[in-house]
Length: 61
Image (cartoon, rainbow, N blue to C red; front, side):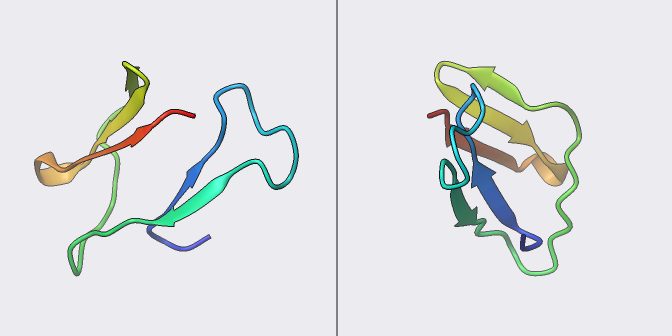
């Protein structure tokens, strides 16, 4: 896994070894990703707050 790679898994867990997707996060140069708290799932999406007010979000499968 890459440093800024995001992996999407089904909420119930993967059915097999191919039941996931990988994405490369588009972040600013010299960005140090450190989550400031727990992820929040709401309305079919998940949100994660990062330093300096940056929020990463994605749809839940």
